[in-house]
Length: 308
Image (cartoon, rainbow, N blue to C red):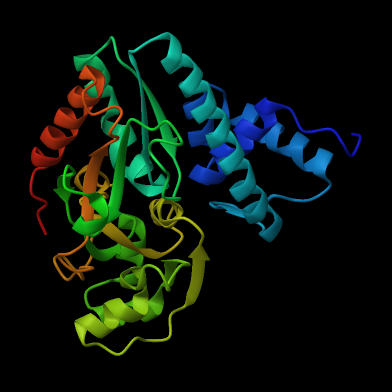
């Protein structure tokens, strides 16, 4: 491959999906391909780049340092392409709605429920932009955004969806094998953590143990990730115990893919922060935007309480 050439878009899309899910199987389901097809795409991309992007283990898929850096760049580039495509389509049809939110909210809460909105509003095409950057709604042609922020940042017209609580979650197999009954038992586990303590200190094990008033034990191991949803997917795969946010992880807890071994023992970032839905000024009067805002409000209010 000449140095000026770029890998094909299919290879980049396959890599971005696999890196976001940390799973070839889930990436294949998202892109309507087989697991082996995604694996071959990633292998072809690695051969073209001359570096390994993933560490392939028996029950785990992890990004290498080069893979982490490339994932960030590829994700941002694909998001820009999607946003530009949606903007062009919006100019031709008023039924396209561009929705921006964080990677974690999109992966854990919005995407599993989006089919409900599409079933109720089949004439509205939703273009989802998942990015942790705070985007300018007018400049980036975003119709609706869902942000996790204080009310002052959300604005007067924002709709509060819900706050979050943080508690340990893991797979049922890990909980049984480690006999997790008290926080001190986490010394027998690998702890999974989102690697951004400066911006989200409430998502760190140190803060959770301090709030529980329990000295933090030396864990069996510690693995850190660049995205919060990657932490949760690693916990589902049985790689350790993560700090999960509810209600974002409620569906995984209800389905039994995750368990909360210590029940209601949680921390909270404080009442000032919550998830807010915000309609851009240029889109607030559009029927599609109003329909999506109403649906978000209803879906958030319909969340059933989670049992300990």
